[in-house]
Image 1 (tube, rainbow, N blue to C red):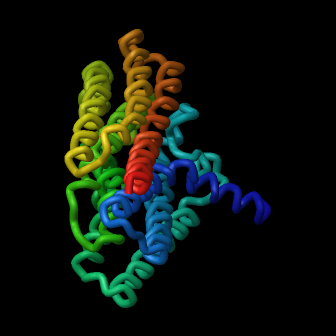
Image 2: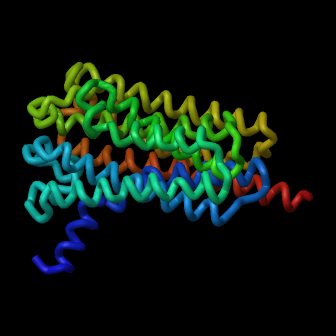
Length: 316
């Protein structure tokens, strides 16, 4: 294998597209800080974003190694990891080296905030604990995905954690605002995770994963997925009212209508196909729409906050 082919394989293994699941909420947290305080420290943002990318690289690559057995028996093209290890393009030991190196670099780079920017050790340890929690989704010794806690851990570490931490990097204090705005995304992450477990049911069961679909079965988890979509809509409404209470102009929330339309399209498909969980093509279709809903949730809230800042600037 040439160096170019090796690098290409490592890029596939890293799954750059899925980095957005953490980058978008991190950007939202930063924008919330700008909206709340009226300022941003670009240096802090760039260093913290670099730490996030290194941490995500560690978690995602390690996850592919941990799920090698499951992915080997999973024929799905939209779930089941990058397939790089399954195809033998990269050895598990090589992947783990990259994963652990990225994790160590993230931990060391985090010390910059303690010694250069004078953040407290408590904040550093909080970030470290959240990183370990994310790593523990499939990482030893926690392996939350194999103990029935994977969906909860994933939803929290992919939504609330990066949004809140990004906010705290800029403001140095806790606030409920980034937490509330991360809830719709957290619910969409949970729903998407459950959805992606349906086509993985058999290989996950063989590999010993104790996720929700394996534990309770497809038929019982289908209504849970359906309910989570409605819960998402209610969480968006709650977030909007929270923003208005915080002083956001009512006209600024108009882009939220797009999220309602997007979510309702998914609900319509599920209503029309109650047995969606047994149809691979329907699952593939819902998977695409689910990722779009996830990503667009953060983008819409970012646009809302910038629109409100613009309106306030225009009005003086």
